[in-house]
Image (cartoon, rainbow over the protein chains, first blue to last red):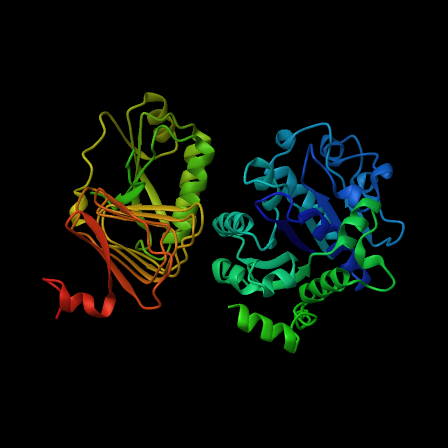
Length: 265
Length: 225
């Protein structure tokens, strides 16, 4: 049986789908087979980020209705054949599927793949409940903003109440320069509130936007960019490797910078 | 409505379902509540479900029984004002009492509720006695107690002690950085600069004031020193 991991956040726009796409790709590069499950019925985006939009024929709903086999609905990635996507239906809403049906689909996928990553929709309503129902563990994505952290805290409570105890944190879109100037929450500020283990840090980078627009996950690049390395490291940590955290402060932590900060206090 | 969801009753535990809450909200609240208080109730405690005017279906009743069972509590009795709920309860084999709402347990004698778990955003704990939290109360979390509130950790959410109107109650925290403090009918914010020592909030005159914890017993009449 593969591991079923839900990627969730509470707040929207913090990078759940980007994380799912990149993490899935990174895990296949480590030799794993991965199924990505889009749980965002009615607002599906995962296929876009993977550049697989035009190859979606069937969705999870057709599988459940018995209109097609699971294999037919799975979209295999051309670049990484060990990655498959089970798309959500775009023409329906969150109530088109039940938590039991999600469990059923995820269990079927977990029999065939090493990892099943579920891309959770924003919010804590029925879509969220569907997405977390099959999961054994969770990756919580947040950005260093009070609103995102507050929502993430609420989500940790809900995940724990649903019996998901293995929760790890990804802090996305960090801008080290702003953190150094005390204009942004630091990772330790975020961790102090959420109090869950850290799976990784991802710096804010324009290349993330470019890659999502092109439908080519960052981790596919030959020369990995900093966020690409960050996602790759998270995948390695999921695999149980001990990988030190990226030192995002390095370019800003110069002697002059330290002096400037010391005197501006 | 200041209805405590769970309190010690005549039988074991009384679980009261506020009639105006919708079912999915209630599910969330109950799940979180029992998760948080799991280690507190003695194992296999009998539970009386007080449903008031709420209509419960057989499935909903089964869900509740399953939740309680998961936390090592046993549903034995259903107290309702509605015939349909009484029928559902009887069919599922619980003892059923149909009629007026029973008198609530005397709140003052309620034992303290001890939570060894962080109270996270969106969680509200109500208790008719004193609440002790070993862990943080995060921003967005809320504790409402008829007695005192003791937080062995950081208090950054909302705390309301003496919710029944008693202004003699105290709020104590290792780090007092609450969003809001309420004692009895008074409300206060904590200062922007949070002290690095434990503090005690109490009512003096008609205001809530903070004292360093190490001096509190000495300076306050009736203190332990």
